[in-house]
Amino acid sequence: MTEQQKIQNLKKHKAIATGLFFVMALVYFLMVYLSTQFSVSWIGYVEAFAEAAMVGALADWFAVTALFRYPLGLKIPHTNLIENSKNAIGDNLGQFVTGNFLTPATIRPYIEKLEVVKYVSDWLNKTSNQEMLQQELINFAKKVIKDLDDKDVVDFMTLKGEEILKQFNLQELASSSLEYILEKQKHDDILEAIIPKAKEYIAQSDIIIKDKINEKHPVISFFAGRKISKGVVEGVISLLDEIENDKEHPIRLNIEKLIQDNIENIKQSPDWKLKLEALRDDFITQERLEEYASDLWLTLKQSLTDSFDNQQSVLQNYIQKNIDKLAYNLSHNQEMIFKINGWVRHFLYRMILRNVKEVESLISNTVDKWEGKQLSEKLELEVGKDLQFIRINGTLVGGLVGLIIYAVTQLIFH
Image (cartoon, rainbow, N blue to C red; front, top):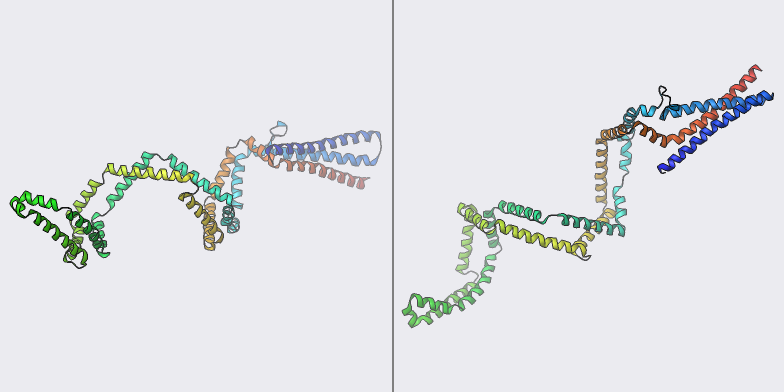
């Protein structure tokens, strides 16, 4: 019911109660007049009823009115009770609510019956709600991405990237990498990838070798330069063939031993520590980090922006898949349902009991902030209609009591 409807209802019932009083007054004066004209016994009974009814109506009108305002504007003691007792009403109302409604005994039965997961599951299992949730998540992500300042993000990524890189133990990382290479025989893979390229390069270097011999030993080059350069090339290629085909070739074993010998040295040596840190600082500068971070962020931002508007994008499919999964689990995963309901119930129970005093203060402070007249009007609007029935009942009951008294008096003394 709207406030306007409540106002109309209150006015209507006030008019009924007041109208009944005037009817009784009219009947009373009519009976007084008739009693001077006729000597009929029933007139006295009706007059007694009407007289007592007026008294009852006036008494109850005074009682009801005294709750909300001064009767006829007269500041009679103990009237206009609500406005004059506003603060006490607020305190008592707060204590009443918390003392009777927010107690463990009253809260627990309702909390234990609470099935939050069922409500969420029923809502989430509707296709329209899933689509709405997905769209809201996309809109939220769009807003976050749009509101982010590119420079702030790049600066943050640069700072965090630099912090992470400086936290790395480069000696440990390098030695662990070498240990991994030996353990997985990756050094053989590296050699087998390098050797064919080396043979190809050396085969094409015949002229370069001949020119070097000519530069250092022109006489020898004049007589046998071509033959020597060809022999060198063929010898080196032959050696590389041997290394490539023989898994136990001494050079292979020497490379493995060299790596093994240097693992511990790299891990412990202060010189290696300085070398690796210098290499890191030379390669990963502030400018390079900013450039990498900027490229990464702009690429990521563009990719996300494109995904937001593409219904078939990986992001959209990922969100939809997880919403479907959540809806299924909330309907069928009994262990999850039990745990979530338990968490929610426990949380609500603790939060309500922990904030009982705050609820009491909220009610008390809210009422205290109202003007006395405003509180009186609010309460009258809520209960005033029912109080008008007190006036009506007072009129009728008062009339009946008056009639009984008159009848008993007539019976005894006449």
